[in-house]
Image 1: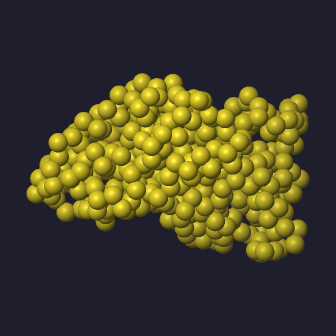
Image 2: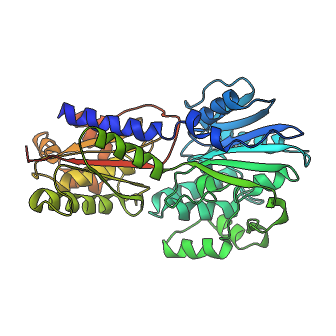
Image 3: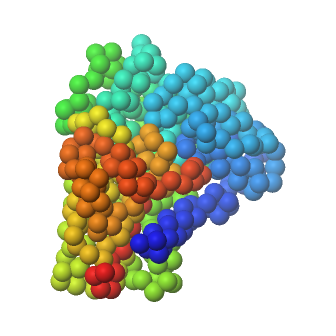
Length: 423
């Protein structure tokens, strides 16, 4: 088991390395402007992006970025501030003010480099007129518990914000804004990463209201009132303030999964990438993965053994219990139930930013006997899953996967190794 877990860990490291800021930033840096260069940004990996930018940029620059508590690293010219994630807080509200201040008074010859990655939605609270920070916190909690995909959550968030939906880029006009985006969104739409503070999209208030109805959300009256006002509409992509701006997705789940596949194949294990944009309930997605793994073990199809199954994207968890865990540990626990007793299977499900949910683990390891070992400790896997208590399960087994902050975020990483012969 130790050998398989070491192999899966190497694959995770390869996936993260493929999104290393030092590697991915360089090809997308714009030319030096005639005027000033100002850097703004937000996300769980933005401090590492800022640090790499300072090393790669050959001219003067200044600016400010905001990251999660404990994720900051020292920069010489770019100020790094920390704030609450996944629950917004006053520090994030203050950081939003700092970003707006950084882009005020710029001219057409100035350049804004926006570093944007996953986590920025919570890190940049900016309630719309008539709303409070508590309203935005309440909205965030409802969205996280709704089971809606991240793309839908961010579509709603941007309609009740003063910074999301391209509004930060609009505030920087007439300066040119170049957005360098590390995508944690299935499909890699840059307008949805961190709710697009510098990238507008065509989705509007009516789309947000339709999503609220579709997912059965009950939003606070103040939020609903804001959504139904004319000022809620985010600027559209054809707004002339965005005409000079450019957007580049510099790292994504697709590129990271391909790096993991190459690593596996160098070690003699064929790899199959199922998808880089899987969405849906984590426990349901896990059951589909488990069914494919069982088919391979029992019938040697659709892929012959040995094989490594890889997938990415961002699953969701509709909270029904009061346990601890995130979407990757919930996937792992459901997978453990689905492959219980089917020998020769080892798996890792983890978030590439190093944090799954609100605990300190990135995810968890799973194998053929995970469910059995839980039963032996007097713990019922199905009951734990119903309570959304996957962290407790894997903590008891010593199977949590802990990495600490990785410095990037390209969404979920799932690797299922199916041995040549059952063990």
